[in-house]
Image 1: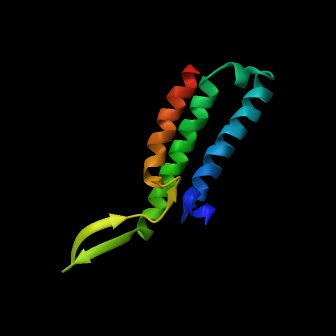
Image 2: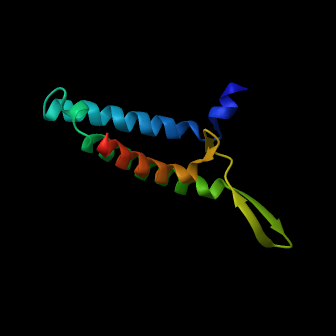
Amino acid sequence: MFAFFLFTGSGMYVVGIGFFSLLFMQLGINKLIHDGYYEAHGWPKMLALWIAAVLTWLLCEYLEENDEELRIGGRLILRYSRSTMFLVPIRFWPILFVVLGIVALFI
């Protein structure tokens, strides 16, 4: 029951994409530049979240063909996705990742 509030459908992939984007960026930046650089600067976090936004958008495009459709008389009335993360449909998560990246730049 608790998992229902966290994600439905393919929403769990959103957390994985965000987590691994941030993790690989931290490991890569600390290896390429020096330890502690990732924590001291905001742009690597912003870049990682923007990469997560692109990957999540690609996931949404892939899953779009599996969206539910409500048709009445052959006309498309409503199209919706069953995949959510924290009750937010995953099609909105790329926008949230971009905004979080901008916030991370200044924190």
